[in-house]
Length: 115
Length: 114
Image (cartoon, rainbow over all chains, first blue to last red; front, side, top):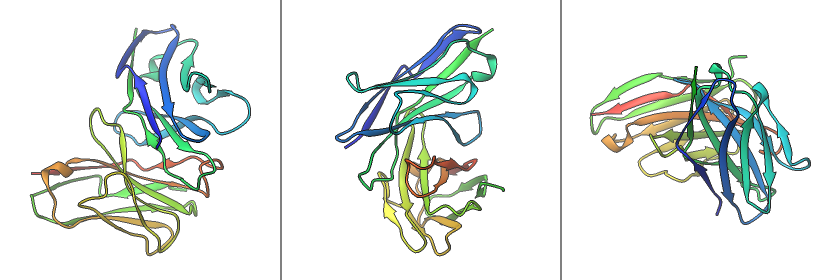
């Protein structure tokens, strides 16, 4: 069975500072990993995903994440926070090549940007 | 393209009432999903479909039924609503396989059961 743990339900950073949102996963087979963002009163939007290949994945809005198999982690980073980054972020996992097309989501991290 | 649309956007029900939530997508996606989102719990999968005429149970299927009579539509039904079903419901769709595509989400339906 697959699962996702997001450390920190709330994270606050100053505008211009580094953003780091943590995600650890559990999967019995190689995983597909995703980060989604949810702005207030909207649906989720894909930021980036890892399926195979390069372990450092770049996404939209300057975000990137690195798949570290040894640490079972997929942390999301952005070098310089912008006010528009304030949102809720969800990490998700699916089991690759298993015929399982379901995503398991973490409980989310709400990111607040301090002016 | 409208993407994924959900109807209605808001609804208030009394305990025991029934209703159907409609999800429509115009991207010709094979896979469609219904999730519920509750504070502190992320998104949980209710039911999903891997193609027209198919449905399957997700993580929290009890109290819900679904139908996929047309490829573009995925209906979620509550036969006898309960206060525990107060939530925000999201529909999503994706092309064949998560490796080849992301899930595209609708804007959500906020349901309150009194």
